Amino acid sequence: MKVLVPVKRVIDYNVKVRVKTDQSGVDLANVKMSMNPFDEIAVEEAVRLKEKGKATEVVIVSIGPQQASETIRTALAMGGDRGILVKTDQMVEPLAVAKILKAIVDAEQPGFVITGKQAIDDDANQVGQMLAALLGWPQGTFAHSLELADGSAKITREIDGGLQTVEVKLPAVMTTDLRLNDPRYASLPNIMKAKKKPIEEKSPADLGVDIAPRFKVLKISEPPKRSGGVKVSGVPELLDKLKADGVI
Amino acid sequence: MASLVIAEHDNAALKDATHKTVTAAAQVSSPVHILVAGENCATVAEAAARIAGVENVLLADAPSYARQLAEPMEALLLSVAGQYDAILAPATTTGKNILPRVAARLDVGQISEILKVVSPDTFERPIYAGNAIETLQAPAGKKIITVRTTAFVAAAEGGSATIEKIAAASDAGNSKFAGEALSKSERPELTSAKVVISGGRGLGSAENFKLLDSIADKLHAAVGASRAAVDAGYVPNDYQVGQTGKAVAPDLYIAVGISGAIQHLAGMKDSRKIVAINKDEDAPIFQVADYGLVGDLFKIIPELDEELSKRGYK
Ligand SMILES: Cc1cc2nc3c(=O)[nH]c(=O)nc-3n(C[C@H](O)[C@H](O)[C@H](O)COP(=O)(O)OP(=O)(O)OC[C@H]3O[C@@H](n4cnc5c(N)ncnc54)[C@H](O)[C@@H]3O)c2cc1C
Picture (cartoon, rainbow over the protein chains, first blue to last red):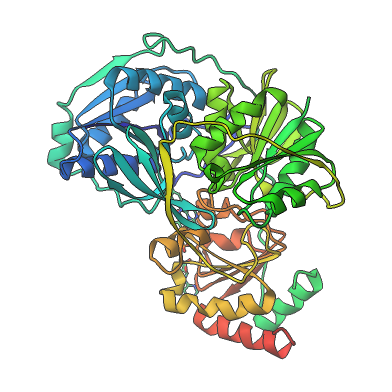
């Protein structure tokens, strides 16, 4: 079974983003970019399926500018087999991402797609579910653990009340949560090997997908600032203050 | 036309996330209808009918909706979507699971976790872990929206909506519920509690984490955690507060042994008052805390517990 893993190049999770003063966006100049952490977990899970003999090939897809090929390389160094870069310099909304991925699924015919549950830049949490719906496939979102059988998957999900297990027929889409696994670091030999793995380039137009944005971003602004308060001398003073504030 | 809110419930009780979503929905398109999909959930529909401002409650009562799995819910929502110009769900794990499927099938983009309805087609939502706020305008046509419930007040009780039974919609039947392990707690829910006390890696173990219980009891608080505490297995995943866990905005948030990474702050910095207890005086959590207590939590927490007792908190 072929497994498809979409990965997104995003601002590194350690970077404190800065909103541009003209409110047109956030400052991405000279900022460290990395693979979306949830996608790293997705790549890791796919590679483990291959190592266990449950997947035959792991195909990595990224939609983004030329530099997104570096993100694909990282995934290939972790153990992916080949990459597809759908190149565009435009911002692509989640629905259009899902449509592009659907076109790739139609061509590649994977039996399982693993995406991150959300990208840490737009925090939308949509693509996996949208892709599943467009394909008419079932889904297991926010995955905590996975048991893959012949023709079906048992996916335990992190939900607001605890954990829930669903059984879905394959093909299916799974989206990853934090506890699914601990992604590996690519070893130097594997990074070297990844340089020789093929990355095919396509455009959204090649796939027949219109990526013109539907939404108009009016502005990107700073959230209300919270100013740090005071240090208190000890527990009694703390409780006096909280009482005075009326919160206890 | 009207807006439709997907009720958050467990077949027995209607969750207050629904009331908050109704408030947002009324600002997008009135009148507001509520969809209660579940199994043996008539009491939930009755509770939904009592929310002020709600005109109609659609009740889909069938075994296939017992767990509100995304696939049957998608089919059900598509069967009624034509009557509405907006469909909203609270940004819970249920709402997030279902709604993007509906959006995709209707060929409209989804607006996730809105903080504010600026006008019926313009919304504010957090991006980059809440370090930026995006204001975006949706095109004409249906709006599919999930709502950050802590950003909206709950709609009041006092309504008397009609309850209309609707038929189940057929779906491919390619998913099924196969078990659950829910955290049991007598405490208030994390997302609606007035007081939250959260622990981080600084607690050091599952055993130590229980130190927070006695304080939580006295303050009627919910207990939360940082990702590091969840990853280390001190508490279950549903305790996680943050960018990728739960967003909370209580009157009082007490962070114990939590450093204050941006991903954690994303989930709690809208709290009214924040208290930080940390031995590192440079910990970033102090930059957002109204009151900081620098010191060893293993000394401070028992002291806090005792002082609360002295002051009559039980
Ligand atoms: C994709 C992604 C998503 C994430 N999502 C979330 C999320 O939703 N929520 C979240 O919380 N994190 C999230 N994180 C993780 C986040 O980046 C931090 O790693 C995490 O919040 C740190 O948890 P912590 O503060 O408990 O641990 P640490 O950063 O290790 O801090 C422990 C603190 O305890 C203090 N301490 C230790 N011992 C004592 C003592 N005896 N007395 C007093 N203080 C003490 C230390 O001084 C320190 O400040 C995410 C990360 C990624 C990459």
